Image (cartoon, rainbow, N blue to C red):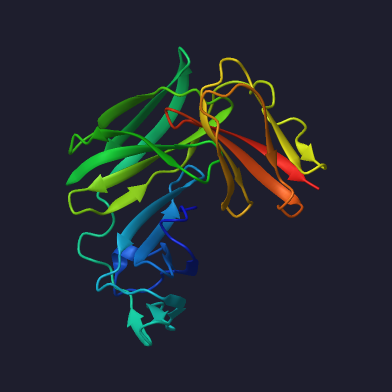
Length: 274
């Protein structure tokens, strides 16, 4: 499971809860972010992926630097900033009350058609649909209101995008109390990518050469490090042909060049700077 930075900054991994005080948490992996009070509760979704519940810690605690457990499996956290130890208990109601039966996607008329089915919805508010071109950094695509059905409920969503190649999707399922969980991630193939926008992709002369066609609709280009930091950003609105960006100040390594159009769809290409 990957979450964005900013939004969080440093994950503190924890344990799988095996205690008896909070049976709703049994079998879930527990983790948190050091700088926020976001708490991650993760378990397998039964289809080879993961279901992730994200909740705020109550009372609000930050600076959690470690997890611990007793001989009976009860879970504790250590807050470096508060100088205190806390025991973890499940809040009343547990994770977001929805069971996702299936989640799939297909390409129809160059659009992505997403379909999913749930059962046992209780106080469920909505689904936020998120997409990604690398399976790590996700962007908002749209929202579908929940039916709050006690039995099976079917949903669909159409995503129009100019992205080519593989696109990844997930559902952010929110309840009426502000809690939310993530579905597993699915992949939809939108066809082969066209001509490489950066050529050559191995940079040895300190210049990144970008080839924008006459039909280019990109608004900006970003050069991103392997850790997700944006190192260079260039406005390329209304530009076509060759655009050159100096990479002389970047150390040797692998980078991602990200192209963003006016609809905030993205396309990426990996490059190597020698």
